[in-house]
Image (cartoon, rainbow, N blue to C red):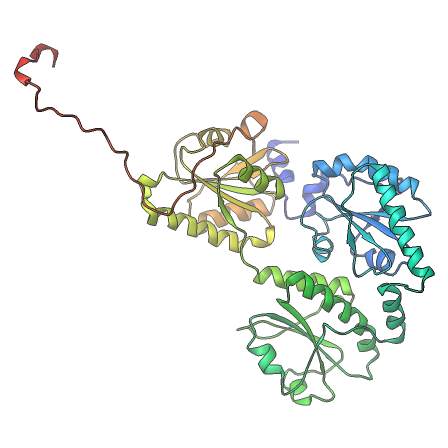
Length: 446
């Protein structure tokens, strides 16, 4: 494979092409059940079984070390407890649905499938099996005492067309504008008719999604419902012709139709996309210690590192202008979930050298894949246009890469964070020349 082709393969960070070279950690021959957004609801949520589910990423070292233990536990628990795995790097919507922020994350789906519990035990097969059997014992005792858990109740409600709609906001002709039009939040509104069969099928999915979305977005995305047969003014205003019709409302924008799937997972995934669109950009951090660099780069597929000119060369206003450019790009590419870092020229000279920056040409920028220990350098201008072209090329798998010097990040020096002020030249010691007789100097030595 040529260098250009290898670079194209490695830099496909926003598509499945990245994982052509990184196989999943589990295969069909294992007793671990592979779970995806397509089968998760049927296999796990609608199941009467207890499930242990690992959310992993193929590139994650901790996940790779867990794999043999997870397989052993799955084999030991076969026929007793279901053991599954989700490639949450590939299926980010499913990971986001369950609040997965790091890898591996293990969750226990017991009686109430809508309230998964986090597994906090050891990462050995013995510890995993012990936790599974303990959770199974609790589940059986609940059934013995008549407490069947939230899931069974939800199943009965689903079959009867009902459901717990406590987090679905009912809207009317009178309350709609006050709640929706003037809101800073995002609203997904279902227009329904009580007699509509499709609406009845959607109802439990909409209700379950409303609760999950409320928790995941801290109420910033709301799910609502309008009885269009009663509130005909709203139905007329938004041209409702069929049921159910779902529309998305965002402040300052015309409503748009939701045309995605009608399952709980589909609805949650779209809601989380809307949330990320309206979420603040990732934090821009100064590299003041080794921990800042490692924690940022280890937690993201890419970390964007800028080396800005010395403060004496730009002053506070010049530096802030560069930081503003980075913040705008972080906002533009926030859905990529990259890390964003900066340092002052000379503060981390070893890091500069390892990234081929080498003490000149500031400001500079490198996009680093810390798992592959490869990087690409910004060749164009350090401007919105130049950086955007650079990142866009990376996003579609183009651009040349090089290995990080030494194959690992160099030692990072702890430095004081920038105080936001202009720099000051060091104060030189005053030298008193009043007693020096220049006539005594040997002019031949001048």
